[in-house]
Image (cartoon, rainbow, N blue to C red):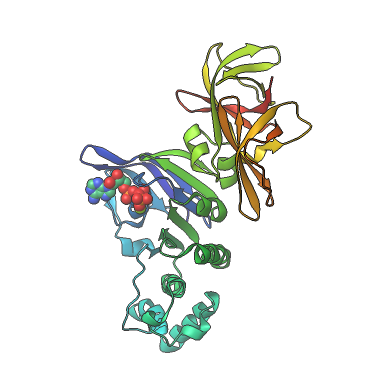
Length: 371
Ligand SMILES: Nc1ncnc2c1ncn2[C@@H]1O[C@H](COP(=O)(O)OP(=O)(O)OP(=O)(O)O)[C@@H](O)[C@H]1O
Ligand SMILES: [Mg+2]
């Protein structure tokens, strides 16, 4: 089973770096998502690993074998890289039934009729589309077509599977359903999945590791919960999580009790966690706190006003005004607070992230209190 290693991979289009000095190791059997806003270089990265795009510089190896090296002039063709593709437009052959679509690649590989039939049956089972084998693509729903496309891609047993936004054509409900199917499929096939998405929730829920990119440069490559709880910088913190992280800009002053932060009409105290932080007096900082770590707490002496409450059934997003700030918090269940009602609030645990305002760099986690 293969490990994929990218070393100093760069792709230039003229003077523009679509991917800039990328270093990435994709573990054997991993489910890695390439995540980031439109145009950040996700598809380009995937296409370079697959051999569909030639890097300007760098080296790529799959399973210990160098498949591309700008220095040595190596460039192994896509067909010889033992990888499967599933792209956004997963066109099935309209004149072939589901079974024929799935069997197509195997026939090309000159498998025997019996072996092909057995493999097709197995895949129809895996993708839970047993009853659809004799139908034509036009007789299937979008989600069913998607499954057939996945079955077709899996047929030849690729040890690496590349997927570029494969669920983007589906409605929200089907997308959620297909996410579980993909996760099961990954567990069952033991293949290495490299998955492109701009949907942070998809990346969070599916991957063993997320590579978050911005303008061709990797911002963080870590397991999704680490990206969520300890983002490398403010861009990452803002990109993952919904509702988004609250950001509070201020000026820091070292005091015996921690960092005093004067922020938009508020006096805050940031107490660093065990790891500690070093910040110069007068430094411009940004405090980041996720909505679930702001609590409505009537015993708190810190009072805020309800700006708006948005109950959606399972949870309620509440916007509160605190000083000049409007912060977002989330409570479980449907709770309706009248506009302008006064509530007590507190910040839970050591869950506030101190960012350097200028660079956005994460300086450390700590506890936030209102003085
Ligand atoms: N053939 C090309 N010629 C010039 N520029 C290109 C070419 N292909 C891609 N680019 C540029 O490279 C950058 C990265 O493109 P890429 O397709 O990798 O983005 P992406 O992260 O997949 O975005 P999306 O989420 O919109 O699919 C973009 O700015 C794009 O305009
Ligand atoms: Mg893309």
